[in-house]
Image 1: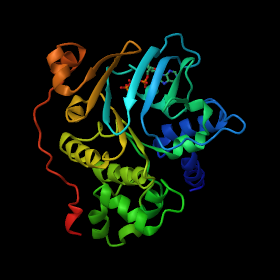
Image 2: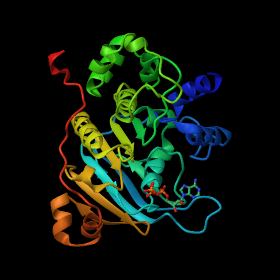
Image 3: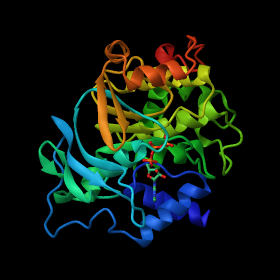
Image 4: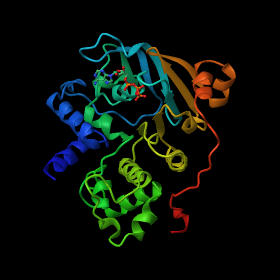
Length: 307
Ligand code: ATP
């Protein structure tokens, strides 16, 4: 519990993530090196509400101790209010891109801007407050479901927690449990299915009411039916926000406003699914390589409309 407790506080600082021993280690590394993403400048202003775009302006980046740049003079404009998929082969830098948006790392060259302002110039806290992240494997802590969701926003009321759970379409399931929101979740969330755990993680993200929702392979560990169902929920949650969705599973990106293909450190293609298929390029090849039999969202989601 002590570890979880510390992490719980950290989560306020490092957006909703935190899962699995590896991730906890990652967080601890970040703690040990709090300024890797760049310390705030004295008197740094808060990030205002994001209105236009998140832009990569000739960004090059490599991890310390490595020689190969992950991003190489990458320029990319992500428009606010869109659902955007970042796709590309394994190791192409999708997670790195999200890490840079969160200022967990800073570019070696170039800059990441929000509405024209270099994100290094605003407080890290305000930057992270406007964003939430859902990962592939989200740790649920050894505490109640309510507390697990509340980790996303310190001081969230019970009503806010429930609202978030409704939006994540897990409220009704929670209400079917004998202890409802007070149900204790095992350290690894063993009592819940993968999809249910992911929905709780989504509720945790959404309780922050983030303007930017980042999803890092968030649904790709799930079976296809569950993945499709959760993606449906996510698309509903994307309304009025910017959703940036990194994945290598192309079945999840078909309905997104825009798909960006990252390869060789650059954004090499972008457009809608149809447009990219027609372009007959890298996306087309990735698509053809993956089996993409149509599957139906036999939704295990709650249908909360009638609650
Ligand atoms: P995947 O689809 O497998 O998740 P990805 O497209 O998200 O891959 P990244 O995780 O961004 O790719 O990794 C890009 C490259 O950077 C990879 O070669 C990876 O091995 C390397 N890398 C990632 N994190 C680190 C790190 N902390 N230190 C050193 N190298 C790293």
